[in-house]
Structures are given as C-alpha cells and as structure tokens.
Image 1 (tube, rainbow, N blue to C red):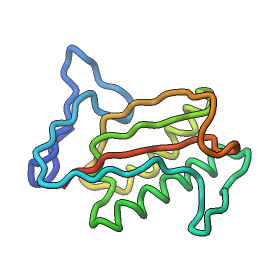
Image 2 (tube, helix red, strand yellow; image 1 turned 180 degrees about the vertical axis):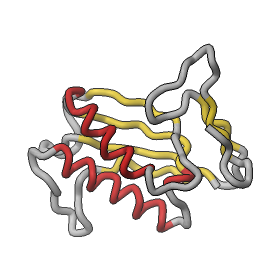
Image 3 (spheres, rainbow, N blue to C red; image 1 turned 60 degrees about the horizontal axis):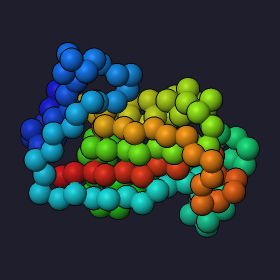
Image 4 (cartoon, rainbow, N blue to C red; image 1 turned 90 degrees about the vertical axis):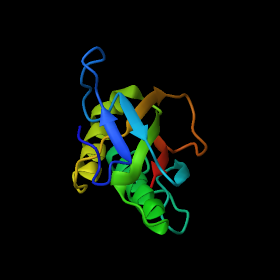
Length: 138
C-alpha cells in the first residue's frame, strides 16, 4: 500500500511475505505522537452490551467505539498502525473481516494496519465475543 499523505506512515507487504487480506505485514511509522487505545468491546456509551449472542452487531459496535476513541484525539482510521483482535470463536473471522472492511472503507487513502488476530477462551465480560485494542500514530 502507498504511504499516507505526509509520509509518516508507510504500509508495506514485501514479496517474501506475501500480500495478506485487509492488513499490512509491516507498518513503518515516523510519528510525533503515538496513541494507545485500550481494548474496545461491544458496550454503548451507557456501558450496556450491544448485540448479546450476535457477533456482527458486537463487531460493528467495537469499530464504532474505536472510531469514537480515535476522533477524541483528532485521528481517523487512517492513523491506525496496529490492531490486536481477540475473538472468542475463530469461526467468526469472516464476520470480523466484513466489519473491518466496512470500517476501513471510509478511509482515504486506504489504510491497513498491522493486525494480530487471536482466539481466546474468555474476555472481560462473559457475553463479549470480540475485543480490539489499537495503536494510532500522528
């Protein structure tokens, strides 16, 4: 992928590593600020769970929360350089990717942070199906 508009973030996929679907193998950051965003779960602004037993609804809420966190520090999804994604069930991977693709479709130029995706047996809330923590750079 091409660098961002000012060159502070470059997303790379060297031929030896291949081109992954929807993320970058390497993100080279020359930033003046790093923003660390705590794991976001499917909670609304009142702390209520959105989408009990509904992975797609939870994933959409998680990305909504991530967007709100980014906006609060003057960033967009284009500033994301790393995501760590925790799924309770790896069978939800395709639904996660659909939500992720919708989230990043709003970014110009296109952004694809480095991503680690893992399945876990539990998350903080017993009904949470997905949680995402992030690092952004400016």
